[in-house]
Amino acid sequence: MAVVFVLNGPNLNLLGRRQPEIYGHETLADVEAACIARGGALGLTVSFHQSNHEGEIVETIHRARDEAAAIVINPAAYTHTSVAIMDALLAFDGPVIEVHLSNVHRREEFRSHSWVSKAATGVICGLGSHGYLLALDAVARLVDAEAG
Ligand code: DQA
Image 1 (cartoon, rainbow, N blue to C red):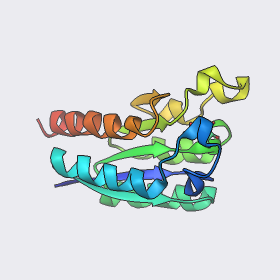
Image 2 (image 1 turned 90 degrees about the vertical axis):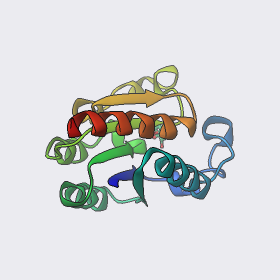
Image 3 (image 1 turned 60 degrees about the vertical axis):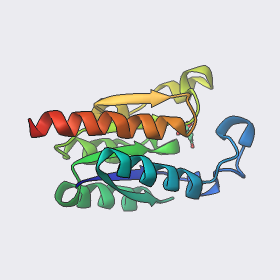
Image 4 (image 1 turned 135 degrees about the vertical axis):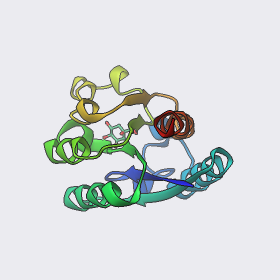
């Protein structure tokens, strides 16, 4: 089974308790369980990660070069600041799907710019945690297409 790394950036460990009017009431553990279930149904093994540290996210992306066929990433605030995460993703050969729970384009102006989008195959935002599942659907198709 193809392995997909699902990566989550800073403050997403507080999901469900952090600004629920924006990010919803589900916890990150709920999102992880839903991703593992959807991945299983699609024939994908989901390896789920969260970190509040930019360098740790960069190193996990480096690991993905050897261990994963695709990456789904919600870089959270690093979306808008991290050239290092963009560069790490550019050094990854498989599909990269960027996910945001909220519609970043309806919010403050600074959230409309994403460094990570420059390294993403596709971007999903504004659909809450369902966006992660749609990203896995996309990965399944893209990985299949690559396998020919
Ligand atoms: C987010 C949007 C970012 O702007 C924000 O910094 C986050 C979460 C989202 O999932 O909507 O932490 O990535």
